[in-house]
Image: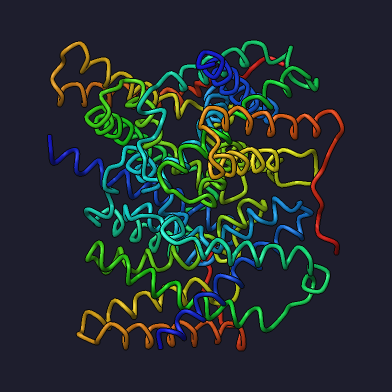
Length: 203
Length: 203
Length: 203
């Protein structure tokens, strides 16, 4: 199971970085822009979480995350013409795995440090989606996750919150982690397959 | 007087959060976007201040601020059609009270930690207006406080600087706090009522 | 040599701040906007670096950087009509000196703290260009350094990386610093004089 988590982590970082690199390509940026935008979704959310929790920034402690994101940036740079423009289904699914993992792992870390379920749930969402928000803001776009559209941030909220609740009622850590990840993944899958959305305000 | 400060704090957080939630509604965002944008002005400035001063982030220490901002986000979500589009005078006045309080309280905290009047004045301004700048940047707009228009950030600067000067010349803390708040509020009131502005560069 | 570094530092901060102040003038901002945008390139990158390395923020430790940036903001405010619109060559060269210094000094600090050449190189680039990225994002523009155009961030990358490599092979600190700065400066000079660019992805 530990190995599976590591594979999920690598796949998630890779695909998050590809999402940033593709946004850079779409906006006509050069190689440096591609690298910066690849790093934003890959490490931006976790960096904000660690700063706010006053923990050492995770990618300074162990730099493998950076190498994976840089690899994803270079591969996207080389293969952009084969990737862009199409809505690649496997990208959406790998992204869903990454989102499910990051929101739950972020909530776990924040619950350890702060002891507050509210803070832990928020930090889970931050870990999952804040980097993508920064990516979109740099590209001069209203952030994708904040617009009316397929369930995305809500899945992160659900996963992080479910993990906190499961731990609160006494479920063992690893089981809570897998259950919460499954919940987040299924909710995001509903967004991809069925097009579930969140309501806008009436006005 | 302590109770009055608490009431001002709650009112300020609430109205700052409403300003973010309304910006989200105006940009067609969904409920998640409304919550994110409500949190930015409500806690963004204080978060930046605490990170730069290397202090525990205030809303992680005590989460009531988050609950107030979430409440404001939900109420705005439900009542957006009654709020938006009008320039509501009571919103501007409650916002002015929040601004006056946050700039002075931010300066007080920074003066305690750093001992520098320059740093304290800057941190007072950051506490009062940085969250609103982030709100506008996410919405893809030139930040409201940086454009030619009614005195706003200047009132925060004045309040924070006045607090530092009053403490420097030996005025007791609580008195300096109330005097500086009053000064910031009157200056902001001049912006609301008389339309006071700050100069642009000649070019 | 120490004195020369101090002069370079002051010149660099001053010109970085002018770049922000001019962006504010171009966007029709008021004096407050000019000050905020002057501070972003002048201290934004170093602030992010210090936060991520968990070090005291450099301009809180010693506030002279802030005074220089404020001075640059006021002078730009007063003299905007003489500065804006022209592509001033001396501005580009003073900016190149600042960039060369900041990327190497940022890498040196990060190498001391983290011991990782990857982290140090990244932090060198962050110190040199992150503040300018924030300046452009606030102005609602795709960041200048991420677009296809003259070599800029690449020079910072080269300077920071060269410093790490030189220290790694045993070159004494001060010599490594001057050599790396020279390398970054020459690369940036190639951008200014010859128009060197970085490739975009083919698509």
